[in-house]
Length: 557
Image (cartoon, rainbow, N blue to C red; front, side):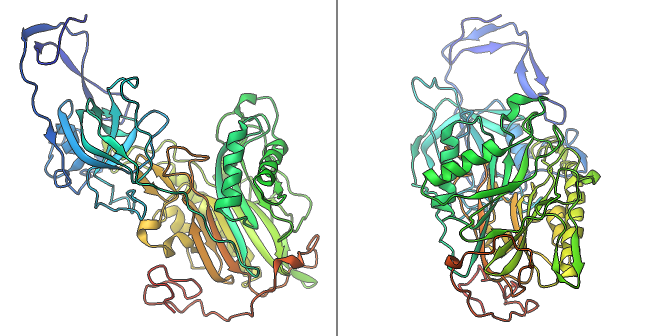
């Protein structure tokens, strides 16, 4: 029952604790309350000022289980501090956005502007033991007709005072429900543009296009095409993740698995944006077996510019046939099928995308590219839940996937230690995770995200934390490696995808392409530079292999 109450009234009533979902802390709420007005006209309490020195650096205790039985220590743990202020008025001043405004009119800000700042104003996530404790969600209690919710990008600031009660949500953690909302200051974040590749460089990009299907609106295709043409500067090869079938999730259980219409619309949009006519290669999955949105039949694939690079087609690849490495005296090691799926029957890929490997020829050199989209993080416990440290149950499958992929790349490099190999895609895990450690074990592959400064190691923003889920790894043979994460989506309220693309440019090593190299390569690609012998065992003083340009200084070598 509701009653006529106003700000300043003192009321009494029954309260209870409500648990939004298993694994999350309880929240205080009124349930079937009977209200009694005790007095009127009281001054509301002052809001508690939250400054950069208020929130503890340590995020949460980690007893190895539930924290609910532990006493709150708000001076020691950030999560305890927010819990202690639940239902209270708090205020923050000049709060910087560390994520773009979401579709649900949420904005993640930081109360600690100097905590792990990215180069562009975000807050980078650097380790399981380094959770960004200053992040707070902002929502609004003000009717949007009176004050529309600010559409912010990373680095923008809610100037002045933002104030309201603190509440907990299982979707995003502790939130200030603002009754006073600061004015948005646009700090002018721009979408990055990477440089074009030089004539002797091969440019390989990776891009998660967020459930792209042929039934999407043209605006989505146009935005993604602009990313390829303008921001990635026309890469030679692009590994694509989250390509859906021709009718997307609307066609659940209808048997449609082909994605030719999806890829054609994408290729057409690139031409319309001023790019060349890209070709594509992919393998249709079995219906409803590779995870993602039900009915979408998500998969990975390749786009490539035939004026710059050739695809080496080797027949026989399908959803269930495993690609192998063929070695004989008559030709260089090559793939048994191209494109081909890596061990698709392995249990590691259950309800998940299977890696796709393709053999390319660039200026007479063979290049092997593996497109990937590892298992999602669905099922993992939240960083702001009651179990600490949270159980990352999905990690088990990704580690197994990394083991399978590592075994394949090991076999390829054992057959040809000088092979040019690029492993790319959405691995759904961090550079410091066991997944990446497994995949890069043995130094045959180098995870390129680690050659960037720490404040640039991200391609995705989740709950205000800039993090690296997408990765590119290369073998030792590529020379003059130049790598870039191109920030065009994850930090913005308006996105073509929720992921940022990445690109690596390099000069392939000297191994000639196999005689079965399809249509050959285009002479318009330019003349290769003279070969440079690089001792990959040598490292600069920042521990970066000397085939790479050290990110800490312009040229460490």
